[in-house]
Length: 542
Image (cartoon, rainbow, N blue to C red; front, side, top):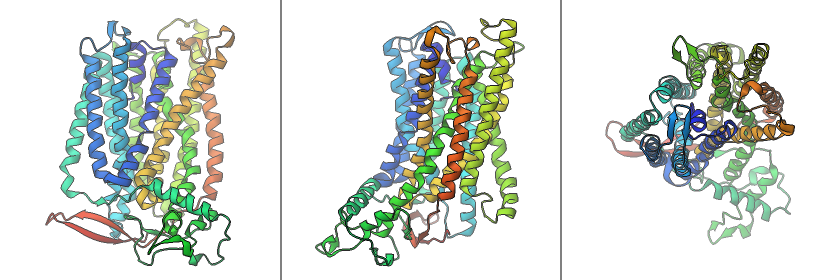
């Protein structure tokens, strides 16, 4: 959806370049904030299966309305030519209503699908356990097969056939996807929802606050935990005690007053596992924060990269290349690097590191952060060269200056390479390091970096526009980029990325991986007899 949307806002809804860029950033950001809602519903109440099912239907409704808004007379913008359109307030409102329905629908899909896929692998079976790590690579690979079609065929249809078809085809594709998901219902393994994770977090905070004046016991083995092998939290393994954030351990200090009749009052006494769940979330937050700047860099691919390309030569003979379709090289980069990473880099790295995954998840993410710096340097360098040609030949008023758009390929390819390392590393990291009962929530948390990256991009555009346009200057990002200084924005992002990588190194050195123990309860469907059963999976991740 986002590949070509900035040009739809600019030309069909007749929005200024800055407004179109900010609207795209805000919508994209919302698409990655709503997963917090879907993840909470999945972990606490519905489980991942029903959350995906319900929110997928909402997604299809949004896509259908968007198709109608771009194809039905009276609802679609009035156009004199392809790039000269006018949309009424009502027409724009319907478009954004449809887009934000899509944003709500994706909120239940994004945080659950990757986690639900990983849930299908049996951690007891060593063969399945090994494949789980590769699953995240190939999951991202298949997403990019779809993106390949979106950034090539679909963008061409939107630019040359019409936006009704351009929105209608993905609407049909999404309906087919939902049907495909439902077709496997009888085969899935479903983990039981464990109740509200936010309630459990609040209980730890309240219980530790009530006992803030009490000294911690020197023997931490006296902290409260149930005697069973299973955790008191449905669908979760027990967690070993850790020394970090020890002030929270007070929530697990057992006093006589903590018991309400025969059972413990959860607002006064929490298990060690419940406390460690909260610690695990706190532990993830600094790593999570370093993903925001990376996501800001990633977001330029569907935003300022497209605007930059729109001022370059987009013609091959008589064929016009839609600027947004250059993102196909990001997709091709991902499709290239996923098998290279999985089949070549991992086996080679495994020989040197001894790690079964080749690189640790943090090493993988850090590599992507470094590559993203070079992507911004490539984009900035291209803009310096482009503006040099404009200045020397007085091409300021050219709509497409004579420099082929294919000079953008390196920056797209570098972004795709960075994705394979950082985004896939994030997917696996937040799934593996999340408490078992909060995996959807932590997957959603990792996705919010994309949201905050989009919002940060929007904020940066607003700030630099306000500063750079003082005194009547055109600014860094004017409507006519030939009179702007877009490269300065790319330099700014490169500098921010270097600082961000430094912070990531410090945080990674401080981070400790979680240590689960015990068993987890998974609800399965027996494939042969098709009967429900309860199966205990012994876990030995460490």
